[in-house]
Image (tube, rainbow, N blue to C red):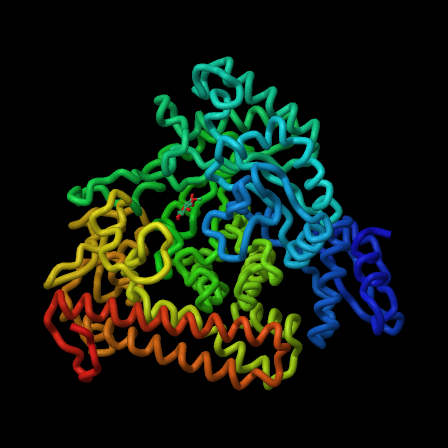
Length: 605
Ligand code: GCW
């Protein structure tokens, strides 16, 4: 028997229906399955072992949710559904809010094999099939995962393998120097080409089904080809050629920008960087290179437009990168159901006729996301943040799902289908993203966070820094003009979107301050001024959190104490955070403008 049957029917315990019948479905797509039910029982058809496993999970979910198998074929929209851990070998997790690394400690691989097996099951049950365990910011320690740490990594790969999950390794572009002792990492140097080929041979001998390497190059002080006068394509291709004989791939990140900008420089505009660097290179990447592009042009902010690079390159494989870990979205203290934001991202237009969703499985051939898991007992710190991991897997499999469907399933599978619990919790989770946006940075304002750790408000924390993240608020206006008269960023979009974004009266309001510099008395569709809208949302956001607390309290009798109490503690912390944001942001704008709240609420002086 394959893994899936074993897990489900022999370990599953009492009360399960008879073992399903597994049937070959040679015409079904890879990893896909068809689930049916007749008088004999359940039947799972699939063309391969992975399909049997996913079909078994789907049946389990159906039974738990009280749904009937509908007999349709379920198959993933993209063949690679990738999780990126930002775990360091020290055991620390960059932007991690769920404890320490599940895989590493004190410079070594260190893990509980039973827990990793549970984790592999967890990920595969959500549809995830590729995992990179180490941080894209590769340290000298973790660079050695492709040398002396390789045998240990191979043991971990073996735990993931039965769950149809392949590993990816994040590598340092400077490895030929760092590990190989070469004088250069120049991708066109024969010694470097040879070094990477040998490194790949060694790695694939240890882990023959490794999916490939992930690279962050020329980004935030990482080594990269630009420093050697070479292009991003030169850099990616040297690695691609090394892994190609083994069937491997390269995921090359596009988060390349100038992180040493001078705030006085108003011409350089960070959101333009990815497109400027990569679009001209369309067609020069080898076929086994995938460019991994963050969904937005800034950096996982609460509200950004979609990256104009996604879908723009017609001859280059692309992956969309999302962030499950809540770096800028409440750090797993504040409730934030990312499925809502991701549904918006996928539903947004990329032209007059297409949405981002329609590119998934076409121009965008893979989905990747930064993990939110760690060694906390509940995996994700905030129990309700588990829904974010689940949502990523579900959306990567089927981008047409709505946030409501996904969250409703998650609540049903986690806490049961009792409507008295499910409906209020669903309502709370669905509104959580809007609430967070209200009390932090509405209208696409972005970047008013505390520096370094990125939790809590600091309106000018990044205003005079080198990171290229400015809102340029003064006493009259706020926002960066990204129109043709400004930085010209909007011109990177399809003409349909250019027309929409250029005009402040037509621009989607939630993105107004991303694209425009507007005076505080600019009138919104509601008739309110921009400033009054900012005041209002900040007061409302705090009220919303108070409502979340009441809702959660009302659900106490229906929840296990182990779920209830820790979330209640986090909601109380969220309320403090929301109040801090409200007061700091409202006071900031009041001090800039001297204009009071039209409703006379208290704004600190
Ligand atoms: O947002 C920034 C984060 C960094 C991260 C970087 C990236 C891994 O603050 O912690 O580094 O993005 O995506 O590479």
